[in-house]
Length: 445
Ligand code: SAH
Ligand code: SF4
Ligand code: F3S
Image (cartoon, rainbow, N blue to C red; front, side, top):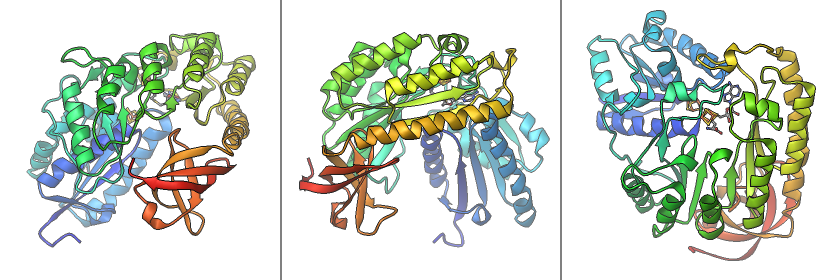
């Protein structure tokens, strides 16, 4: 419980894992200013939103959330409200004009100035800091007091790819890699604090380059792989056009690098891929998948698909459906195309109506449910190494964890297994998880 004198902050996080990572850093900086985190906005003296603008609906969510805070501010006039993240970057100080109950606005690169903005806001000064580029002030490495088994570390920010539908390059700026030294230091500190699995984050990790010395992403993985007491490494996202032989070899050869890859295709139609500015063809993508499966037979693939991109015909869409069948994704995120500010696709002709997009999405997701279930059923009989996280959400007496390929595995077992590796024989594949039984003694690896 927070003491009377303690200040309290509620951080509301929207969007991708990079925002989740940034929110943890915000929490760390605010803790140094004496702010304890609280679960509910109505308990807070400060509310910070970390926002996402990737689709129209994501942005709408932010406005409706901010709207509701008006009432809270009437009840608690000292309450400070700040908006950060991608909507803040996109809208800048116009947010302060439109929403008089907001106290400050800050883009992703102004994160390090958060303490100063809070201080200024408390004095009645409403700031909007949204210049992109070198961070205004570097943010110290922040290790949470109780970090848990798994943690994320951002290795690069921004994106240079300018896929024609995507707002990210405009709201996150150009690609910038962190130094390998800083990343390794952060991972090592997390492992010291008890973390056993690290997910390395970037919009396109394949184009990572250490600004000190030029190490590439495969090289970085090799270095992280050597950190003692770290058990598992995952990473996301991989852009198909930049996935080279080196990374495939790292997946195949480095023991701690898990056999899981998020490799968004976005469409199975060459015409659409070109209009999306993705930089590969369907054949090149499928070839990449084939090579990956040759070298890393157990790899589980994840994808992202956009349906109803401007000009998408039924035939284009069917090419996407058939590509799903050829690839066999383990997990798939799928979206209706959404117009975004600044983007080239936003200015294209041939927009599809919402109903058509909706129907295609339903059809795609129905197919993926069948295909995903098949992938999962094919796991039956295998013995999988599972990092046990704790009791399963559903099912009494079941423990839950993830396999190396990232699949959720539930199995009967004692609670003492939490935090350990267990070998589990898979007995059944379900739509979103696998069921199994404990196969052998467990260890700390
Ligand atoms: N950097 C990652 C993706 C980041 S955005 C990559 O390139 O794979 C996450 C996903 O949101 C994208 O892969 C895409 O499928 C989806 N997305 C991005 N912009 C979109 C838009 N305007 N409409 C619908 N979906 C979009
Ligand atoms: Fe957006 Fe494309 Fe960059 Fe991914 S690679 S963040 S989809 S521009
Ligand atoms: Fe959203 Fe920004 Fe991430 S737009 S997906 S929070 S980079």
